[in-house]
Length: 178
Image (cartoon, rainbow, N blue to C red; front, side):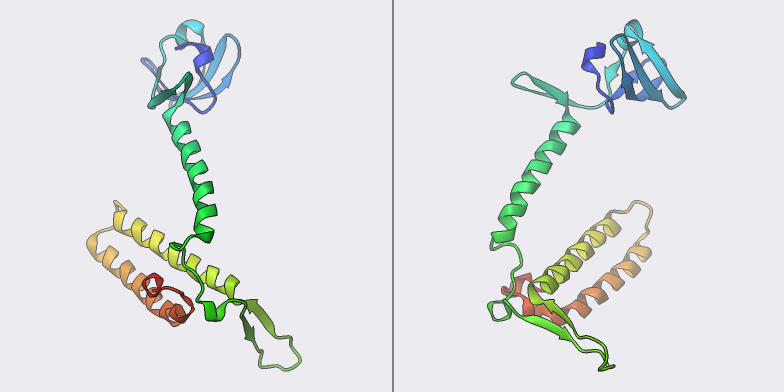
């Protein structure tokens, strides 16, 4: 490799030092953090480096594949968020609740009531459901949990879903409920 091909954060392989992360670049040197410590490599030692991660080239664009994928995912997510906010696949509040409020009355009449718009409350309920789904996936794919531990943790997630069924009446589409 050449110094111009490097960038901070790039993972590289050196035949003597092993796997390292590029930290700092100058015109003639590259500072790389290897497992055994930081090394400043000159152009001749940089020539021995190989990329330690896949790369992609698109119409004259060359960058680490990890960076390209991250950019694509970020752009896709931004576009999907715009679509999902308006899309029928995103859980929607049932029409009868649109514009509604939840009013919480404290026991002490000297205290002020708390009002929450139902759209805000509904979004938070949907987020809790989505976070539970992610947690469930992480538990099921965790390499250090045995089956008994997975079943025990899954039990608590199932109970949480059960508690959230109270809010099913807020959903427009029945198949999007808990």
